[in-house]
Image (tube, rainbow, N blue to C red; front, side, top):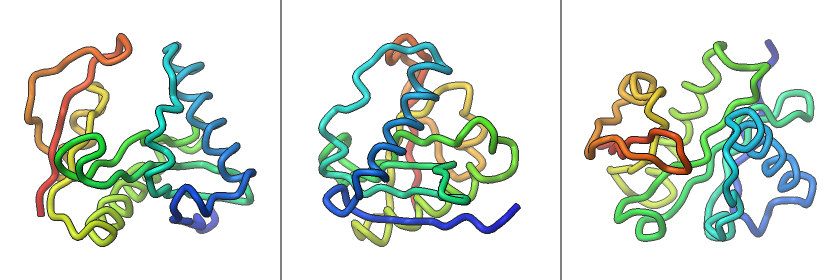
Length: 150
């Protein structure tokens, strides 16, 4: 596989096409694939930094990086998504490692909180995240709050 072009920028610098592709990928996975009706555009996008993985002009991986105090006391990473056609190729690990690095640098933090889908618990554990609460339902999907520390 060719090298992924990682692009990291704040909302205000996203082009109309980049924003369209981000929302399209999130919609395909979180709304259609996971059959979950929810409002994906929650106003946090405007305050977030966006990490996009592009391959041949196709968005194949994405995360939204949020400052401390917006979603949680700590900085957070959310809307973690990999295009269905590119899963099981290590891209999710690369995406999250880069997201952790960018979050720490961007906000000068050593802790990151996430709300992870429960079925991905071992994936996030492998990246150093630990559970800090009992599982809960978010939009009818089991989630768990986790934290990463340096």
